[in-house]
Length: 637
Ligand code: AMP
Image (cartoon, rainbow, N blue to C red; front, side):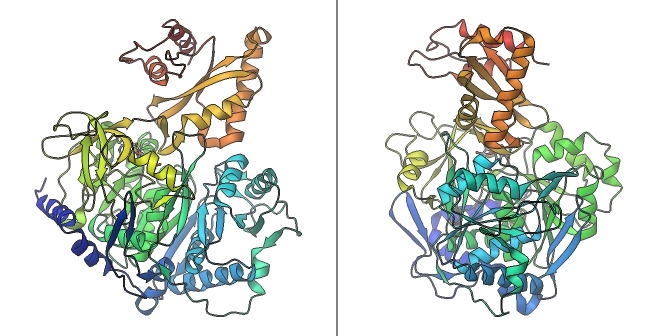
């Protein structure tokens, strides 16, 4: 354990004491077409505009500016264990492919500011489409390809997209995922107005194609006269993308990202936090449908002149050594994964890890959910000599909030902690009710004083009011950002995360709102009311447990009738939200525990489910309602 921590702390201190000087310096790591007139405009809190007046482009910084020095360096290593395909795109290839796709967008009449939804698996075309969008100032909105037609429809509608890009199909463990069919279903749900651009990757030759509305990407791309498509120089505050995330409402929130602040934040993080070096390879195992996939699967590594790996496949196919084989093959130096990913691998013999040459790997960053101690110990045992960094952030922040920063020489860690506050973030632990700072060692809510640093969400898409209300009004008389995570800080400043304060469940690092699950449960005509909670699970961190009250329970008197109903209700959740939300358990109960004011008391349900202390139950209307939950939980296997 070396003790170089002051590097990180000194850097953080300077970032907060002189934010203008600090961020102006960081902004020098990217190319600007026009210089910014100011570093930070915080004249309308809680809204922050970073680098106003400056003009830049995310695609230029990710691709074009590397052409002079790195045209022949791989930009993307694509590996699919589903199709057996392997492809390398150099920065020159990537530049070519991005311009080809941008030409198609122009030929379809898309103009700056238009929204484009991407519903694609882990294939290079997904990154190409993202880069082609931001090249032209089109706002992309990537939807995870495991989401259902209804979830996709909601997001297309919320974004007001003019185009959806999909492909014939994805593959998961050899099984076809009919992405084109699901897109058709989604488009139908919203009235069939949106055009679909289809990439035929040859996985499903029978995928439906409607020539009146669908556009075949290869055909239209080949019909373009090859030409240079210049980057649109965007004002720093202009949007780059929307990424929806779950919250406390049934409607997912469209997190909106700016252009200049995000590009600067990623460039800085690649150097100071991830300690990546231009020319090396960065391997993120996250899907492009999530925030990590955006920031560290595509943009961060490319901005930093690194090669990124796009891997389509499971972590255990053809065997549990595939990720390590990829590290060996690509000579990756920095890797990013999740606790669930590691827990899956932990079930297999550690010799699989040791049988690969992992000499290139310096750091393994882990985030998305709590990293439990046995898994942390297993990783360290499996990867001697690799620095394992648990770190914490959110879709909203876009880059790490708490971490160890090997790029600054700080490598001291504390078991169970995702580290210290990262430069730029004025993090403190707030009293849950008042928002006042609490002493070290006392639990509160992780809060951040304003302004938020560059790279964080600029607002909720088309809903400034919700942005201001949702994130910044948790504490009366204190305009600070609430993370909605319980946390604690120890005497040395290390933070510990204790789970969400709101009704958000984290299944294998994927955020799901209890409200959206309950809404899906309630769509079944037999269901009168429903509650969803996140039960503790050894493998996935949390899993969805649901409790439903029936309208007419006498219709479901037999076990067979009840089992059939539960299967139907489960199917309804998967159809409504996608496979990520599939409940691990659905129980039929007589009543749900409620407060005297009629609100479902999920906290009390969870205490029964997890068999732990329910805390204060004085506001519970009918204590017997918990017996009903207890009885049905006893039937879980
Ligand atoms: P998402 O926006 O999907 O990335 O989810 C963000 C949430 O994941 C946070 O608010 C935390 O609840 C949780 N989270 C992320 N990273 C960590 C971590 N290292 N330790 C504990 N919880 C985490």
